[in-house]
Length: 247
Image (cartoon, rainbow, N blue to C red; front, side, top):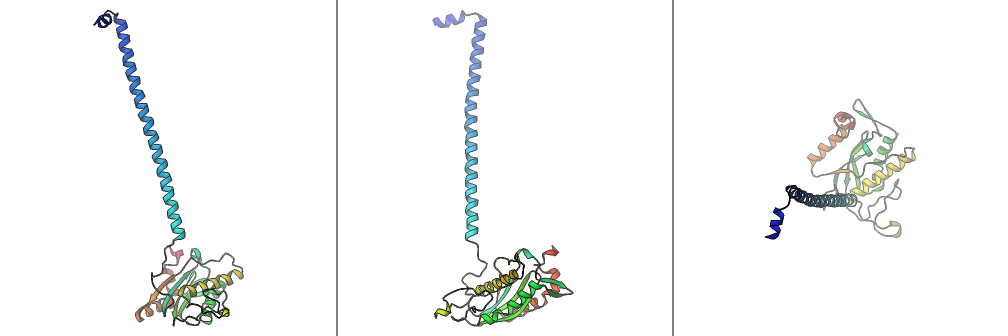
């Protein structure tokens, strides 16, 4: 009560100064608290951004690694591609480059590299004993062909005289039996042989597109349709999905 009386006896100027000082102190405290909260939220935001960037980078690296080491196969899962059957195969030049020749008046005019691709295709049957070759065509930037595997035999192999024989299974020279060649083995051997001969001819930058397209022919109707497509492919080049120059 005594202090209260003293406060009342203070001059009005001093009372106003005290009130102003108290107000300023309150404002400063509020500003300080707001600054603390601001710093906290800024640090939290920066931390979350850094965490997300690190997390996203980690996910991207995992996805890239997964794609690199676990590329999805385009082959039919569980299908034995060494068993007897008819297969429609398409093999493309890297980046769709038109290196095998050109189409004139609905006919394919082969270049030097196209001649190599054409010749080595027909040599497949000389080196793989359980294969028959059906319709085939060399186009400016790809080849189409029907391959028939006539029977699955353990000793039907890619011959040692092939332009670039693929090594698989045990070496027959040691008396071991090679497993039956698969469609992939046949196509891989052909691609390697063509690449080797074309590069030796001076075109050292030649390359095929990775992998190949295939379709299992299951009936006569499908065979006739595909065979006609291959035969007539040069006449329909302008509308061909592999003719990238039209896009």
